[in-house]
Length: 136
Image 1: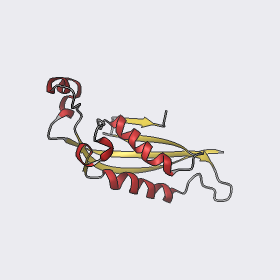
Image 2: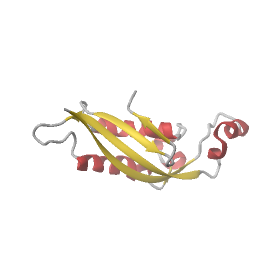
Image 3: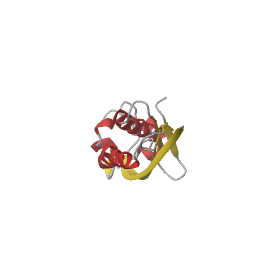
Image 4: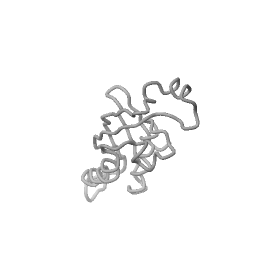
């Protein structure tokens, strides 16, 4: 049987959406108020879902405590109360859009899981704006 196990998490972070190689006018046109040079923040909600076969010995797809600890060390400790543009190395040259943040989260977590497990990241930037990434 294939089952999906999910864990929710939360972190607060600031960012600025812009491209260094674009003019101020173009950045303003494309990114609007998200291009604020003083940055702006979000209360991100994260759902990490792992899909796989139920282990016949344990009854788990993945021990939720293992998933909780991975999210804490790899994501919450690295992102919470940080400025993506200034404090998070993965975004040194990567625009910290919700889409890119979800991909970075996926790339940080996937190598920590057994290769037979599928991973899906859902990141809520606001209660109504969210992105989903599953490695495709």
